[in-house]
Image 1 (tube, rainbow, N blue to C red):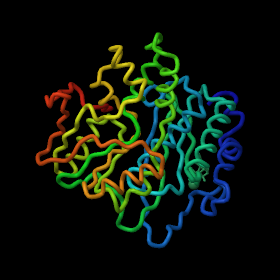
Image 2 (cartoon, protein in one colour):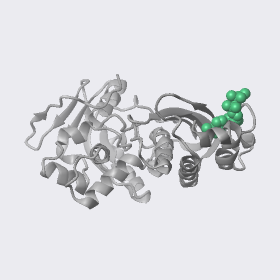
Image 3 (tube, rainbow, N blue to C red):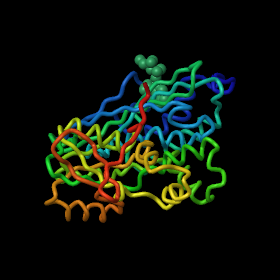
Image 4 (tube, helix red, strand yellow):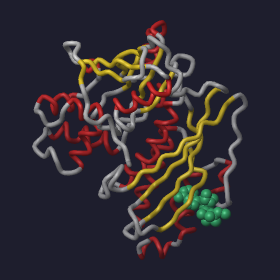
Length: 330
Ligand code: ADP
Ligand code: MG
């Protein structure tokens, strides 16, 4: 840790910046005990998820600290949304390189505070360590679903509709902007896609209400095509996607029109944190009403089929091929 953070000391740092985020949550003991407890609501299952983000991999080292905090929390909230869960608490592990100072921590904690209020979730514990490596933030989030009703990737059935929330490919474009590319691209578009990369919008209000309507759900983190592949594999079904039906933002449409980004790059770019939902045709009206009620943009992009493949069809019914399907770490 830097001079600053070191002088502050690990326990002071936790007391000053993180204990306030534990608020009145009884089981958190003001972040002063070895562990926290959580009493599950009667009739609910706990849903557990964890995701780490690493400087240079999931965010850029110079990104604003408050937005890094928001991303760390939001990628986890997105997983809970995809399981139909309502968030309750989270744990936070920080591996801090020497350059981290107090202003950075202050901004980071402010980002968490803002999102805790937004998503109804409270910090209940974590760990703080120094690292000679890149800044790494790991969040473990815990939510609840009615017993036996967690949505899975495996539940899709034959002839289900495949829906997707929001728009696809913006974060992939935003990463390019963040890396200093696309400098001559429209300023408004640049700002929009950069924000989509830095601070994704988990579709929580919509996801939380999907149990009982959807057969299967997942969030798009690796890339739409790759993640459809995960659903297809787990459900033991094929998926046909109509490329023209995949929702693109004005920025993404402008980028493809100007040949700055291909459709294939948008559909395999990842970091979208949109929900992919498989639901029976008979529930079309219900799912559309739910999207409207929660102000969620929702598009029907395809359906499940026999087989095991994800097929993407062009406007003329031709099959589109993708060199890469999505992001993989290894
Ligand atoms: P231990 O001695 O068991 O390793 P620590 O000294 O790591 O515990 O942490 C002391 C307390 O501070 C614990 O309640 C822990 O959950 C909390 N804590 C440590 N780091 C963080 C963090 N980054 N965010 C939230 N709580 C934290
Ligand atoms: Mg301990």
